[in-house]
Length: 203
Image (cartoon, rainbow, N blue to C red; front, side, top):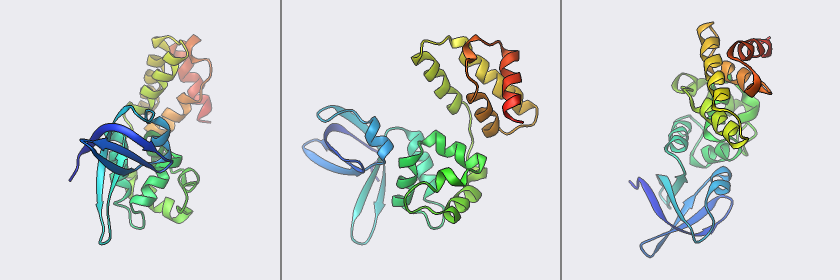
């Protein structure tokens, strides 16, 4: 219905933002994670939106990236999880963390969201596990983290190579990414050392 809204941020709350577009202020429901990442009031922002039509209201749910919107759409296909519940989940887990939690079967992480109990979290994992694919998103996040700390680009490529090597050995992408991400001091390691350290984390 409305693909996105782009305009000036007029007001931000923990679960709502007002975006002015052409003299009209749109109330857009957002997650706490999105609220924390939005620019300040008076600045321009673009939110990809999902329109939820009910008998008594029309609501817009906004996301800073198409990736966030995509995982939100997947969540609301699960029985017992509506737009409000999906937004609650994305308030405690960002899109990549949620994908990781689904693929690794982390019921505890998902059920931290208000109104989402263990049974609902288990159902979400069961119904979405085969529909979620972790490509390079987690590794890309690690690359940005390294760059922000002044790390070498080689450190990030070693992480990616280690994940690929673990997957070729039969490990799942989620557990491989988790094992590699847990390694400290990776910037000073060569690819072989990274792989060895990751294998230790898996045992």
